[in-house]
Length: 278
Image (cartoon, rainbow, N blue to C red; front, side, top):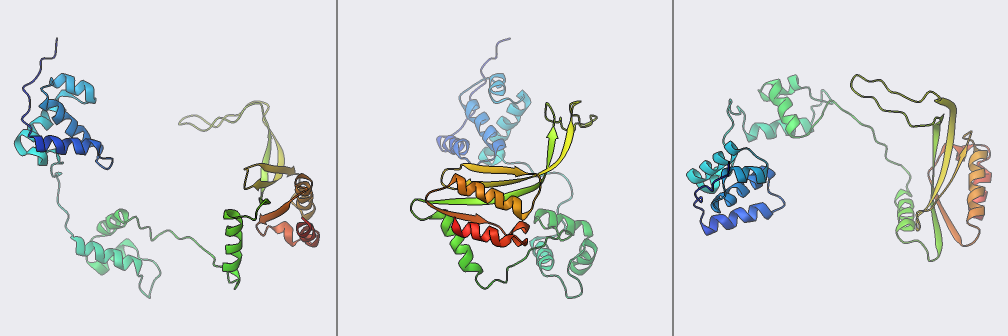
């Protein structure tokens, strides 16, 4: 059956312009964009079935927003109040909960929902809801460590400056290592877990111990020089540095690396000497 055009919806020019602005704005919610497009097509006299097919909605949805706009105008496109009991706490209670969460008492380092609820005079579920809305997780902790090196700022400035503005025609290498890499022998990668399905691998899957990977990234070009070693000792790291010395024979070379354990071995002096020569 052919879709017969519906009577055009009465939309003023100012309302139509406001609807077009909402459909073009990148910050408009998609549901509001969809409702605006329904009204604009209804103002053109398009059939309900045609609008539903174009926008991927049902005909009752088209009828709903057409009726809401006819009754309340642009305000009718907003969501209606949701059913259910309204909130029993206001903004001042929410701010009080957040402030208390961020400033624990002297008797404890963390608030629990029950203790804080008793302090504020609300239910524990209210405290949990405010924490969820504020993206606060007092039950979780992480650690950090701040360097006590008095020359920390100068060292960080040198390293960052070397990355951002290296000397002319100089080569900057960022060196790092990855230890305990599983050396696997297989004809195909493992298949991941699925609901009701265990992890699967080929019949010739074999573990060959672990390897250590040393790698140097040339910051200017992105070229990576790498080497794998069976062990992770000062001699292995020294062998990798010798590889870099052979690879970059000419030019001024700067090596940026962290304080890995291999630098502290009895042979660490040889590592420093090779770095100074390079």
